[in-house]
Length: 211
Image (tube, rainbow, N blue to C red; front, side, top):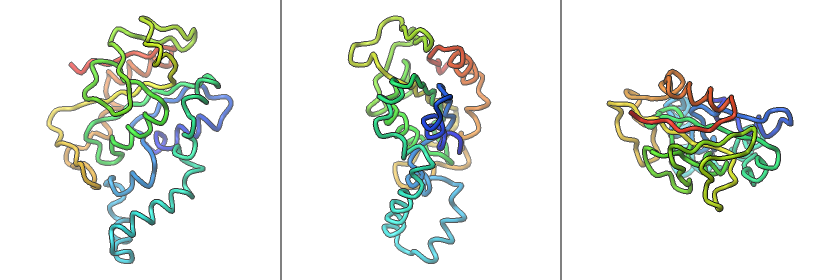
């Protein structure tokens, strides 16, 4: 997952890498911290010195400027145009209910990369157009079938969410999802995700059915 957080920066910083699979990743790091169970111990220590939540949030925002050069957030300005210009493409996969890297941060990364979702998406993602399920995109020939709408014909990423039974709803506040039903490790072990990765590595974006 740390690779998913740093991965876009790594792909954009290299002239040799053309495709990136960002599994349960997100951005920015400062946004992820307080929404991740991995930060719990550090947060308890931090709270003894910085007692007000607003002050901690300001601190995270200031620290983000130091993290930007090494994580994806610092490389996302104009990312869709740069990705198209340099022939780079991304597959983003995330699980709803992830208590370590929140899916909200995955959505931020997807929007910044100019991603699309493929129908039937589990839920609408703000700022992401949805393509029909029978649509594929060949990365090697840059041809699509059927052709996407003109306003959506140029893109560099597909965003895929996975849902699992028995997972508690995601919180809307600045706290992690329920750790008892954490989906963080589910996606990488999901055969559907593996098939999508294989297709992507062979040059094709394709959707995943939830059934």
